[in-house]
Image (cartoon, rainbow, N blue to C red):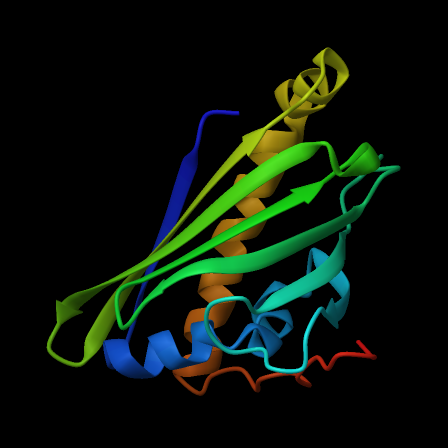
Length: 164
């Protein structure tokens, strides 16, 4: 799938936003409207090598488990996660969080997602709505991230290695 990018401006310093995003255990607090049943893949959820497994709550999705791992962490501007999902984990994914200073004390967060469907059926699923669905859910996730970091919404429970 061609990459898509969504973004939001958060009224918080870039270092604070980065610290929150760099800790993968925080991600369910703003993505749990479409990514559920989170499990960390190692004890330390912060920085390069942090990983998690979760389900994507998409309509008609029979193969919902995905996993991601942080492969690049450039403080305080960029986090790159790679993962796989779909049937037999054959769909590759790359997600990139980029943080730039929007104005003094506020941060623009951009999230870009690119998937690489392995088969014609995977490409068909993306073409008939998977891409648009993921883009709208990702945009909502950034709005929720803003609400959490600005104190409008309470952060949910952090995920651990053995539980949701």
